[in-house]
Amino acid sequence: MNAIIVEDEYPARKELRYFIENNSNIEIINEFSNGLDVLEFIQGSKVDVIFMDINIPKLDGMLLAKTINQFKKKPKIVFITAYESYAVDAFSLDIFDYILKPYSEERIVSMLKKLESTKDDNNKDVKKITEIQNKISLWKGNKICVVNVEDIYYCQAQERYTYVYTDKDKFILRESISEVEKLINSKVFFKCHRSYLVNLTKIEEIVPWFNNTYILKLKNGEYEVTVSRSKIKEFRELMHL
Image (cartoon, rainbow, N blue to C red; front, side, top):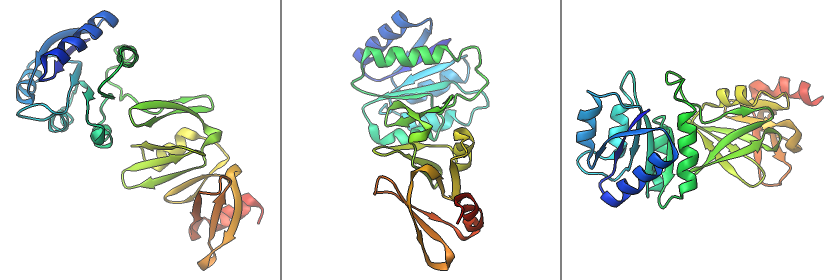
């Protein structure tokens, strides 16, 4: 795999190159300190991966990623940055990974292994969520957490994203709630509302609500979800009401 590094600080470029060259077979074919030079270079060269900071001169990393996202054949982008606030917008651009500075060598090595595992399948979109038997991998900040499906209380659609709630944690996904429903693929989950997917085993109390709907209070005492009117009949049958 061919890669470039985009970083305006020389020591940071040098350190990242060292980690990549000593922990992978990825070849660094060039380095850049600003976004405009990168845009010119990748239009005439084969680049599989871009390791990039966000705060770079002339054309910042986010704008550069948005431009690259329009390419028919686009390189994978790994952001390595001190800016946590861009994470959600970055993943909406289908980037490969988002690593916060200061990072550890272990974090870089983990990312490199994941990158190299995709080299024989470059035409497929790399999924951020992977089903492993009864587990799924979910993003929380810049970490991937492996979660038991049975530990999920409910999922909620909000604009372009889906939030997944367990007893103590909240995860964000860029997939639609319908795609998450397919991924979970469990009979104990019920789409009780166009914006909610609830684990039926986590329901503690069913409260009648106006217009013949229900509010579902879940077992941790903090979560509540709504059953829409269009789902009432199906819900009653499932719960033997």
